[in-house]
Structures are given as C-alpha cells and as structure tokens.
Image (cartoon, rainbow, N blue to C red; front, side, top):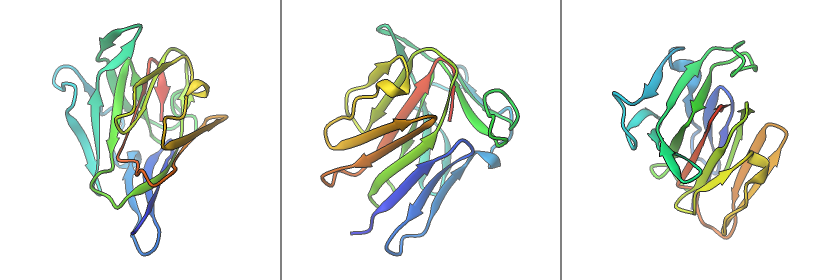
Length: 175
C-alpha cells in the first residue's frame, strides 16, 4: 500500500509522496492576496479551493455551543497574520477542512500556525470536534497522535487509520 506524508506550512499545504507516490501540493502562494471566503456568497460545506486532489472547504466554527460562520482570507507575507514572509490562510471564527480522501492514504500531517488568541476548533476525520483555548490543549483522538510544539502541529496516524480530513479554525489564527 502506498502511503502519503502530508505537511501544512504557513504558505502551503504539501503532500509528500513515499514509495513512488508523487508529491501533491496546495500552495497558498498561488491564491491571490485578498481572496476571501465568507457568507454570502459561500455557505458551510462549500469547497472553495482544490489543488492536486486536495479539497479545502469552509465550515461552521463552534464556540461555547454556538456556531458561527466568519471569514477566511489569504493574507500577504509581512502581514501580522503571515510573519513568515509568505502568503497565509487567516481564519476568523470559521473553520477550514482539508479533504485528503482522493489521495493515497495520508499518514502524517504537519502545519505551522500563528495563534492570535481566542478559541480554536480541531478535528481529524470524524472524531469529536475539539473546542480548545489553544492548540497545546489538543487531545489526541483514538488512532492518532497529535504533537504541538511552538507554532507547529504534527498529526500522525497510528494503527493504520489514514487521515482523510483535517479541520482547523480559530477566532484569530493563520495556517
């Protein structure tokens, strides 16, 4: 079975191929700065970006039992939300969901983030949604290991369960 490693970085979402599987990328650098997804015209569940068989949808954000649907936007390097100098995806009371189901089995995901406060939402596949004060509070769901260090999050499959989707959002965050 082919396995795919997956890495999120501030500028892009990268799927690295192993055992002959070519690399797959979703690169936020290719999305124009200022691109915005919000209601209207977008509604929860809309796929707003697809690159190399990786679909990104916008989803409702949950805080204190209330769902909201804010805004996601691409911000330029040098912006406080993208300090790395490359484009970043900024979420404000909205979730984004990356769907990897069309790829060979994804077993590792890594992304960098900027935490500017507020509540976070996090979910792997269909595990229970986590509503947390910061990403350090992520609890690894059964079948996965989640490690948070500095501004990095690594999600790894254990026991053979592939990562088919990853949802993340915040009141003020960038990935």
